[in-house]
Every structure is written in structure tokens, then in C-alpha cells.
Length: 178
Image (cartoon, rainbow, N blue to C red; front, side, top):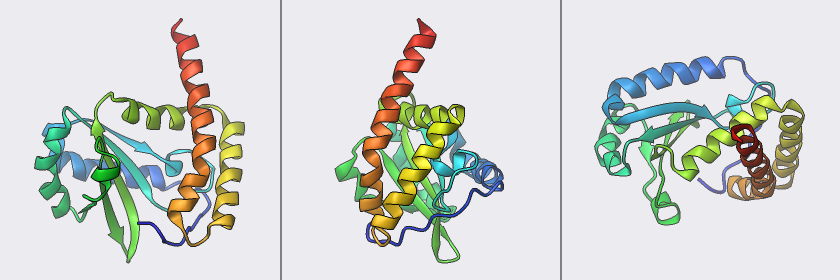
């Protein structure tokens, strides 16, 4: 991860189906540790451009269960990215290549932690607010043009927009619950 080329493609209606097939395999392998599996990231937001990588979020009962999941996920072709733990100790990250490219990125968190919730809030907000999703698409295109060979810089460049949207989503959720 890091200095990889940023490739954005048009929305592919097969992405949700690909997620469902992968979810089934994951549940068969580690289902006893899983509370929930969700499709997150841009491939989970209809009709916006995305990197052609299916982001999958797994909520586990406790992060200690990850140690039991790692070998089972490796048997499914996932590579465990242990180096991420030093930067994000609350997340376990895996990637699964296909045809020489990263095709699946699996994020494992404890269920209902703030990090776990933020991914779902962002996704759901963009699904409900198509004009904001199009703004996000604009930001993605701009960052890809600015950092075409650096995924890390591309991701960091989107972070300000993401944080603004997360704040809106949290405010909206709080208002709905009030």
C-alpha cells in the first residue's frame, strides 16, 4: 500500500453482488466471530466513481478474536497487513488480490466502536444525499488528478471532506433520535 497508482472507474452494478459472494465465503470461514459484515467505501455508494476495490467491514465481538480469523482469512486468499496495527491499533486490515490487483480490502473492528460506526455513517449519508455523493466524486477526481501515483496522498487529500460529512451525518442522526 502507499505509492500505488490511483485508478478510478465508473460505478459497476456488479459490485454489490461481488460483495455478497465474498461475504458468504467470509461467513463460512469465520462466522462464529462475526457480528456483522457490511459493504463500505465508494463501491457501496451507487453511481459514483470508485477505485475498483470492494471494501468490506467486519464487526467482531472483540478484536482479540482477530487472531483466530487471520489464518482462516489467509486460506481465502487474504493477506494480513500487520504493519497497519502500529498506526491503527483498533483495526485489522487485509487485502485480497485478483488478476494481480488489489480487489478486496477487509477492515476488521470491534462491533459498534466509533471507527466501525463512522464508516457506516459516511456510507449511509452519501447513499441518502446524492448531491453530496456527487461532491465526493468531484473531490475524488481532483485528488486522483493531483496524486495519480500515490494512494496514500489521494486518501489524505479526501480526509477533510470526509470529516465534514461525518459531522453532518452525526448531527443528522442525533436530530432524528431527538
